[in-house]
Amino acid sequence: MTPRLRVVAGAALLHAAFAGVASARDQREAVTLSRPDAAHMLAGMRQYLKSVEGVLLGMARNDMKAVAQSARKAGMAMVSDVSFEAALSVPSDFALRSMETHQLFDLVADEARDIGTKLAVTKRLGEAVATCNSCHAMYRLSGR
Image (cartoon, rainbow, N blue to C red; front, side):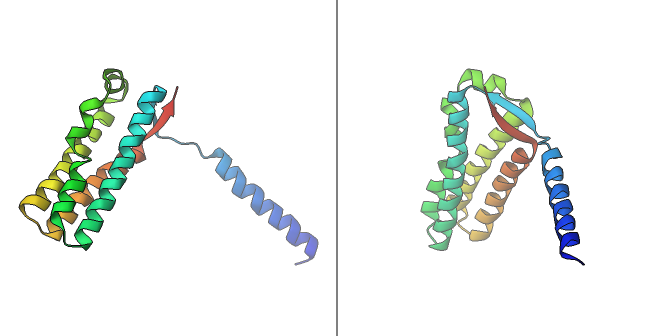
């Protein structure tokens, strides 16, 4: 292959690659919230991650009390300060998945407290993370 042909072939490959990226659109349903509500939701998602981290670190130390405390922080108590406007503005399936995720984090805490095995906690944590992933696969946050 001549140097000029390599350049042309490289340019064609780059063009094809970038054209594919440009034409790819995010097909997830937009969840539109006010800035304060979006900030609150993102803070809640960060709490999910902090709780997952706390659960994993607690299990690594065989400290089921720490596991339960970490998981509980992402449980149903988190929804007590969700604004009425935010609750009404999200798709019903999104709201149901959110509630399910909070309930699953409470179940992680219950498993750690009551059963205390890493297997039981890991199973529940996997269910909670799967719910997070399914929601992120279907929805995207859109500010207004």
